[in-house]
Length: 394
Image (cartoon, rainbow, N blue to C red; front, top):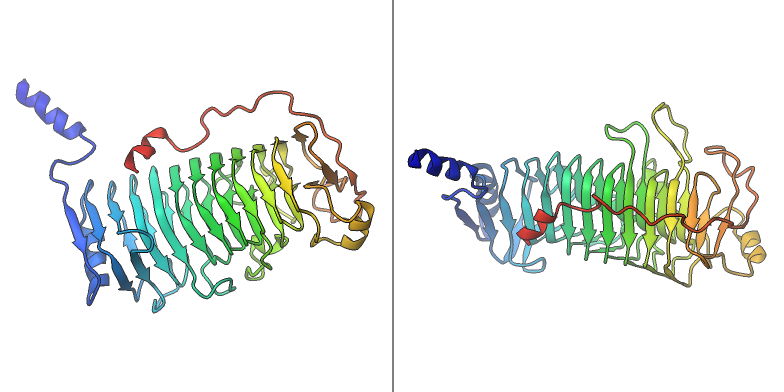
């Protein structure tokens, strides 16, 4: 009986007693040694990348649960993909309970780090940089978890992504915090996902700072329950460099925080400065679609108290000169297309296009000051954010 109980205790342990540390150093054969460690690792193992620069000629992959990949800091351990032969991601993760921390990827031909179907995943102090700066041929995404339950992105930095620097798509229970998204098309994007917390980040010099989208015809639909709070969203004024046909190719230069076709979104306690089109934009989905289950309207979006400074002074909008003249030289900080449902804290200034219908263009627009009610109830924050146990890995 004692032996049976002891065996059960061993089986229930989340960290194997025989977990190993695999140490990889830079130099000749480093890529092969690293990929071999990623393949042969067992659950609970840690792969340690020593400080230095690692020349990568191909992408890496991990498909073992419970592995930690650790470097010597985002400026100390650099995986250099400048010579990458293929067009895939730098690192692809398809296993659960993985922790990645303290290393960098530079110039991957495709995405930086993509995790797909990887539950309870942690990205901590990971940097992805395209060193030539904004360019349409850069990879689409820097940090790219998709189809996951339990995502914690903390302290990362992404520069130069031709779609989104930090993107979380078709996922649930998400936290993105303490991170820097700079000079991407979209700094941070939450797409077709639920229960996401985006807080204490810096989004600067992107085309659009923070985007919360819901799109049709995707495997996971119905994004919502998102809080965007306590972020610094400043000087998002980079011209859009997304490849033609990309959904973010339509984001206007100078967009701070943008909500499109989502429900139950709270925007509060952010500092928004120097976003020349609109510090906050709330709109319906504008493109034709064929999806009977899709709702193109923003619903129950709440703009709480935020600090606005210097936005709406150079809007990339049709009829900009007339709009600026009508509003005294600078547009109010909140732009709403007039569709769906929006509430705003008392004293929040905004303007509305007062569109009659989604997806019909601006022909029927009747711009005027925004008139919306104050929020009727407190925002339900229950279940929003990554599971608390993911913090224990930091």
